[in-house]
Amino acid sequence: MTDSRIPTARLGVNGPEVGVQGLGCMGMSFAYGPSDAGESRATLERALELGITLYDTADAYGAGENEKFLSPFFKAHRDELVIATKFALAIHPDDPTKRIIRNDEPYLRQCVEASLQRLDVDAIDLYYMHRRDVNIPIEETVGVMAELVREGKVKQLGLSEVTGAELRAAQGVHPIAAVQSEWSLFSRDIEANVVPTARELGVTLVPYSPLGRGFLTGSFAKAEDLTADDFRRQQPRFTGENATANAALLEPLHTVAESHGATPGQIALAWVQQQATVHNLPVIPIPGTRKPGRVQENAAATRIELTEDQLSLLEPIAAKVAGDRYADMTFTSAGRE
Ligand SMILES: NC(=O)c1ccc[n+]([C@@H]2O[C@H](COP(=O)([O-])OP(=O)(O)OC[C@H]3O[C@@H](n4cnc5c(N)ncnc54)[C@H](OP(=O)(O)O)[C@@H]3O)[C@@H](O)[C@H]2O)c1
Image 1 (cartoon, rainbow, N blue to C red):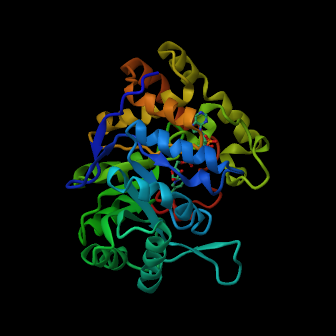
Image 2 (cartoon, rainbow, N blue to C red):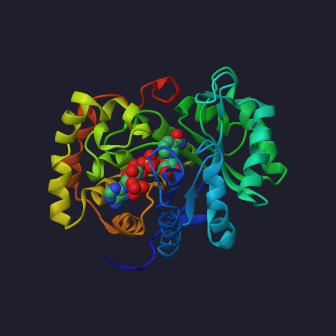
């Protein structure tokens, strides 16, 4: 394991150079069971030492708690890193345990002010629409997001889980720096439309859940391995017979890992990274971890190159995955393509 900094890639056509792997910070406050704040802080510091400069959060992660948790780290290193956050997942007015999607101007303006306040920064470097509200034309929402850029509140715009057509429509209003969507050895639906559109328009791909939410590392094998409040217990591919069938798909990943003297997680990350070459566009995955040793392991994957034979061995996996990425796929790009 070397301590040298990871390579860089450009975030959007005229955007900053960032480490070619970012850090997903969601699990530090939300979705994946209990976290140790001290260990999470050590993970952030270790990531920066390794050259990881794109940090991913959202207002929805712990109802603002994740942004608040990250704020001291961001402020201490403001000139060294790029802050990405998101809006669009609102608390349901009748049931605070549920979320609804909102892309309207009053809501968006309220969100950006709240995120700026929680983060305690003058501007957000990359502001994503987290989910698409199909009742509002995307041009309208991106028009308001573009106003935020002109007002200096936001530097670059991003979209999450949009279709190829939605990305194209948005780009007609304002340059989109990045699309953040799920992309891994287990989740390849965006390769049909979103990836080719992003390549054509010069948009950077930011794959989320590149470790298949941890399943590809072997850190859990089924829903029952997770704490009762863990979000992954609701995901069809990790429950019952689906989980058993999907665990059996990992064998080629283990074979390739052995031949590199690497972990399966590192090979999963190397595969996503190498999609930059396969599809000819910038790709900056954001694996999530709360452990310094794991961020180091994940960063080291940026130096692994898979051979054509190894890529071929891994190629059939995604088509065989049992169960959807989410229980409700209507709010994903694949659900609307
Ligand atoms: N735009 C969206 O809709 C959306 C949706 C989901 C996620 N995201 C973003 O994408 C980021 C990454 O996605 P994700 O966290 O869902 O999934 P992921 O990166 O595929 O996997 C994260 C899981 O893998 C574990 N892990 C990480 N590195 C590991 C290693 N080297 N060995 C063993 N286990 C390891 C983590 O556990 P520990 O934390 O305990 O290390 C965590 O449980 C999130 O943090 C979030 O910022 C965005």
